[in-house]
Image (cartoon, rainbow, N blue to C red; front, side):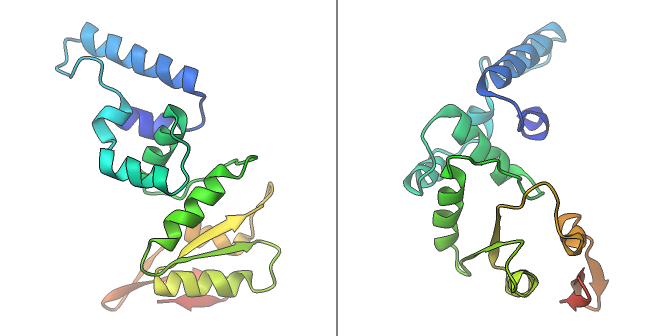
Length: 164
């Protein structure tokens, strides 16, 4: 399951199934104890959480659910290529259920950095839409999680500002 979360994200459903099959064969070959027929969904998926995702507009197919598990289990932010805007709708609906909510912005917005700054400061979800092939360099410390211990808490640099 950890291998699937770490490595399988960019691949199609067919390749992911092949990865799981190969990993299970290797586990058998090395005589390592494991549940027969285990999958990422059976190991890391929580049925109640998956049902909530589906209620929040996540398509109820294996690939979408695996993608949601990868997003849920990862420590980094996902890049979602979403031509049908299904992931976009799902993330917005999930953000509505959080205490702080979700802000949506584009890199071309005039208040982009201000929105991001407030989101970081107050723990709000930020969905960046239509980012294209390059990102604003001011995002680098955020994406790399370059937090600095500042007294009893942490701060992070965003553009020319330090956010605590």
